[in-house]
Structures are given as structure tokens and as C-alpha cells.
Image (cartoon, rainbow over all chains, first blue to last red; front, side, top):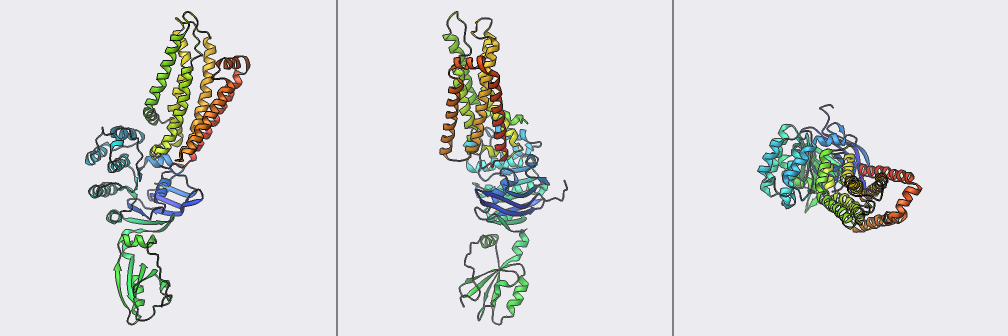
Length: 307
Length: 224
């Protein structure tokens, strides 16, 4: 296996449920190392994608490679090297924490007991506690301990902060970044907590209706995705939406709000050509970008329609 | 082929079910000894409690698979380095072995108690009868797993009732056809007609249900 092979590579990955696509033609590439965030509204296909990578779901079409292996044909070998935390926990409820950890340990070729013990102490997970008696947050933490125990090269975390209070959430994120990521492991996680994503992700991908709409380093995304608020003295340029870099134009009172994806300088130069046009550039948070891409701002202004 | 830690885990998780089966075993043996005509030969082939226990085991096995799918523990296990084939084997062995042990136990009793108690059947006859019963019950158990794999992931009681009704119908049809309840007819059928054919047929059904069940598990989506 070439070390340069990405941690995850999918080509045309498709999953349909009773004819309805949950993931459609997904081409995803996750480089090795670092923290990769999968974002998207509910039903975008994030959980389905993660389950496909683990071969819990069978792909309807397309190819997937995980850590250089075929994720379907070599799924057991893949899962030996992957840690997984599900969105909702489905444990054996009548089992003790220690018993469950011990059973999972017996399934993997490697297991970092020192780390597991340390995390259990840190998260206050006593070995004798019954799994079914743990709170939702504690079950999430137990799932995280089970995911990191086998020293995975790739961690797949589906909403890793579900049910956690802000303090625990920060603690978990810190551990993920300070220990897992710095050891060169790849972390792929899906989350609706965009502040968390901004805090730890190196790269983000947006999924919408089962397809990938962008995948970029976070810094680059925040640098490229800008908005320009502009007030034209007269009618706006007819071809404004077709300018390079312009993704959408929305009306905000008497002004226009232009969403840009890169090419800010080029757009500003063009705007300066319009005498009397007043404009200012607005930075966007990841949440703003997420809402934009998720289609939260439906009222796309058709240039020339109102005026 | 067999993942031993997984098999141990499976057996551990249905330990109460085993306890129930072995209670049947002891009640069956004890009642037969208690009610056996004093001085007369014991008919080890007439152990109704064992058959009762076996039916119970069949439904227990089916419930084990369904609950795994419904509660999401199947997804929990298959997210670990466990192949679906190993998963199937663990479920089949953990649930199926006790059924076979239960059904074969009259032979064991006859063997152990032969110095003290006379048996109305020879050991060879009893062994053949029990092997045949065990293989038929294994076929039914594998059918129960297969149907559970098709219906267990639907969180709909309708499918569970339908499956239950289907298994009951198959069981009734089977028992009335080859006479598991009417053991005299079975013994006649076994020894005077086609025991070899019966064994072959039940083995063929075992193979078919094993293949279909394993294939179903290998191809199905595991939803939590």
C-alpha cells in the first residue's frame, strides 16, 4: 500500500434506499493526517457515507478505498485499522463497561490499554458500571474510548459531541486534536456544531442531497468565501450573477449582497468601475457559509427583475 | 470461519436462555425417570420436555437475531473487525449447538444409565432417531435465522407477527406430516420406510437455509 494514498477515496459512490438516493455519485478524497469535517444539513448523506466506508451499508454503485484498501472486499482489514463512533449508541445494555472494553479488545490486533484506562478515568467511566445505566453523554464518551482503543489510523466519528456538555465537548475535542491528530492519525467527523468544526478541522467538505458540493482546507474556505454588500446608484449590472467568482446575489433592503467564492479582488476591481457604487467586504463565519451552501437563504435575487 | 471471542460473547449474552434450556433438560430427564414404570424399560425416545425445549430454543434463536437488528447491536459488532460470515456462524452456533445438545441428550442419558435402567429402544435406534430430530430442528433453526434476517430489521410488529405465524405454520405442518408429536408414527416412518431419505432431505434443507441465511447477512444493509 502506498503511503501517499489518501485515507479515503470514493469515486461515483452511490447509495439508494428503495430507489431514493441517500448518497449520489460522491467523489470524496480525504488526505492522510489531520482533521476532516463532513458538513451538511440533515439528510445530506453524512452518516450514510460513514456507514458505507465501514461496509455496514452496501454501495449501490461506485468505488471506495479506505487506507488504500477496497472498503468492500477488504472490509474486515479496513475495520481493523479504523475506529468508529456512531451517532447514536447501540450497546449491550446489560453489560459492564469493563466487560465491553475487554470484549472489544479481544477483536483487535492492537489495543492501547494505557490510553483506554486513562480516558476511562478522565471521563469517569468506572469498569463496573452497567452500560445501560450510563447517561447519554457518558455512552458517547464510552463509544469514543472504544473507537480510540485499537490505535486506529483512521477515526470515523459521527457527531462525536452528541449529548455532551460544553466542558466535556471541549475536553473531547482537545484530546482528539492533541493526541490523535498529532500522532498522525486521520480524523473524519460529521458535526452540526460548527464552532467545534472551526476550532479543530483542517479541511471541510459540504454534502448536500447526497452529493459533494465542496471540499477545501478550512483556512482557504474562510479566505475565499466572502460577501460584498453593494449599493448601486442606478440599476445593477445585468450580468452580475455571471461575473467570475459570484455564486449568488441576494437583495438586502436597497442593497445587494453578493456571495463570492474566490476572486474577490477581481470583483472589487469591476465594482470600482461603477461610479457611485458603495460597497464593503464582509467576512463569513463557517456557519454563514454552511447556511449559504445548505440553501438556507432561498431568495436568490434575479438581476434586473425588480428594478 | 469462527471468531472465538465473538462466539464466547454471543453465548455470554444468551446465558439466561441457556439456563432455561437446561432447566427443560433436567425436568425432562427427571420426569421420565419419575414416571417410568418401575421395573419396565424406559422409553428414552419419549421425552416430550426436550422437544418442548427445542421449540422454545427455535423461537429464542429467532428473537436473538431480530433483537440484534432492532437494538442495533448487530451494527455495533459489524463496525468492529468481524466479518459477516463470522457473525452468522457465531449466531448459528451459539443458538444452534444447545438445541442439538438438548435433542441428543436422550442418547447420553441412555448411555449413562444403561447399567441400571433397561431401555425400550436400542442405543443405535435411539441415536438414529435423535440425529434425525437434531438435523430437522437445525434446519428449522436456520430457517428461523433466515426469516429473522429478512424481517428483523423492519421495526414493524406486523412483520414479526407474520414471521411468527409462518414459523408456527411450518412447525405444525412439519410435526403433523412426519410425526414429531406422534412419535410412534415417526418411529414407524423412520425405521420402516425412508430414514436415509429423511436424513438427506433434512441435511439438504440445512445446507440451503445456511447458504441463504449467510448470503442474506453478507449482502444486507445493517442499520442501527
